[in-house]
Length: 131
Ligand SMILES: [Zn+2]
Image 1 (tube, helix red, strand yellow):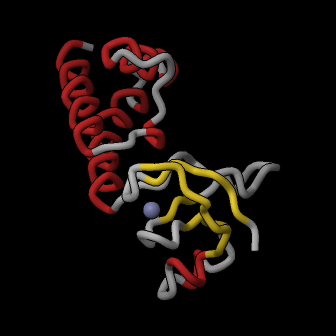
Image 2: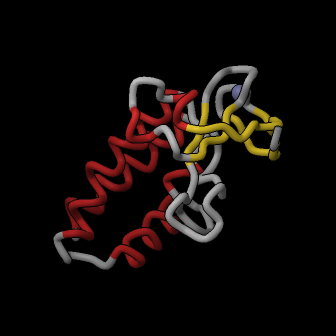
C-alpha cells in the first residue's frame, strides 16, 4: 500500500492518503478505471493526479469534499471563458486572483474550504466585469 501525507478538506487536517485507482473511486466509470487517485479512508474523499505527466501519481492538490469540488467548478465556469477568450492571459488572470485574494500563487486545486472558494468566485466575477 502506498500512502502519502496530504491535506484532507473533509478531515480538516493532514492525513495519510492511500493511492488507489478509478476502479475504486468511480466504479461506474470504466473510462477512469486505470487512473490514479489518492483517497482518505477516514472520510472517503479523494483527489485525482497529474496523470498525464511523468510524475503520474502527483496529486492535483488537497483532497476536496464534494461541496468544495462543486464550488471549484463554479470558479472555473467564470475564469476559464475569460482566459480562453483571450481577453486576458491565463497566467496573468491567475496572478490577479492571487493578488486579490492575498495568496502568493493561486491554484484552484489548493482551495481548502467552501468559504475560500466563494471568495475566489466573488473576485473572479469582479474581474469578469472589469477585464
Ligand atoms: Zn479525510
